[in-house]
Each structure stands twice: as structure tokens, then as C-alpha cells.
Image (cartoon, rainbow, N blue to C red; front, side, top):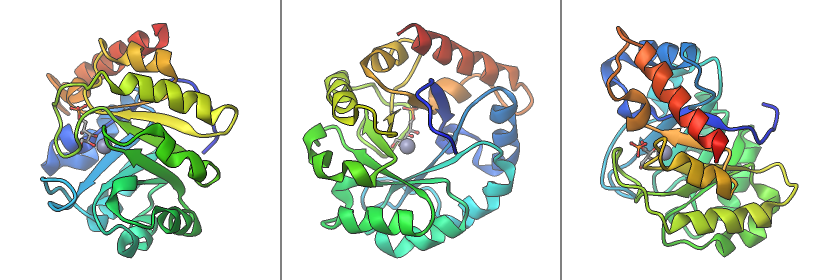
Length: 228
Ligand code: DX5
Ligand code: ZN
């Protein structure tokens, strides 16, 4: 993975057809997405359950771009090796998921993946001040994690601006997760975000039988973000 700050669209397969992940991933990649965002939920850290490393391993051969794994689980550390072995390019853990996030980030890089840290809406930008040399990505949650299709929380835009200043020239991506649409995308790109996760806004209205809808949805988000 090479680093750049161009706008990247990362569809969340949380909004895809769970019985058809392989075909859904091929469809969104054919339609121009940059990364594939994979939401892992444990029914404990967040009030919803999705899937684990076995599913990640099964979908890996279908992903040609970047497998971006967002762990909404606690504890995290016992599962890092399994997600790395499943082929995750980026593993993102929540700062709120445990008392020793420093160790978690070390373990993610130690397992050969890029390390991401996710911040819930109440967690300030300053919480990662002493972790800047340990991360490849910061994920700003613009909804409370757990479900797709929620409303974008506008107070997070200021956090993105603060993080962008803190990052300076460091090769750290700012990813936004939750409520991204062509309306909200330019707000966060203008504040300094480069990776936009979008679930419902990419998958709504389309299907593997009608994938051009995915392409139009991805382009609409990208075009709006690039104007931001
Ligand atoms: C929420 C997940 C998101 C979610 C985004 O907990 O981390 O990735 O799928 O969905 P939308 O784009 O529908 O808000
Ligand atoms: Zn996510």
C-alpha cells in the first residue's frame, strides 16, 4: 500500500448482501471503489453482531484493492493475529475498547498489518496525541458504531480539522465512518479527511444484477468530496 491523500471511497459491506459477499465485492471494485471496509461487531462493544476472522479469510481472495478491517470488539488483542492471518491490510481498533491501546497498536503492526485507531463521537482528538508514531490511520466515527444507515453527527467535523493539524506531514490517513452521503462528504473532505466509508449510500438501490447503481453512487460521493 502506498500512501496518498487523494479521496478514497471505502464501501462498507455491512450494507451488502451477506449471502453474496464475493459477488458484491467484485461489483463494487469493478464500479471503482478504492478500499473495501469490513465491519466486525461483537454484540458487546457495540449492540450488534456481524462476523469474524473466518468470514474475512473467505472474502479476502475476492478483494483486489485494500481490505480495511474495522474491529468493534472488546477485547481486541486475542484476535489480532487471526485477522492479520485472514489477510487484513489495515486493522483498526477502538481506543475505547480497552485500557492498553498502545499494546494493541504494537501488536497490529507486529502482525504485519497497518494500524488504525477509531474514535467514538465523544472521544477527543487529543486522546491520540501520544500515539501519532504508532498509527497509519485514524477513523473518526461520525455515528455511534453498531449500525449502518444512521444520521451523520456534525460536531465531528471540528475533530477532523483538529486531527488534520495534529497529523501535519505524517503519513496517516483520516477516515470518516458513518452517515457519509454526497451531502456530508464535502464537509469532511474540506476538514482534511481522505478515506470515506459509506455503506447505505453506496449499496442503496443497486444489486449485483444492477451494479452500475453502485458505480453512480460511488462517483456521486467522490465528486462531492473532491469539490469539498
Ligand atoms: C457503523 C459502521 C459503518 C457503517 C456505515 O458502526 O462502522 O462502517 O457501515 O454505514 P453508513 O454509511 O450507512 O452510515
Ligand atoms: Zn466501520
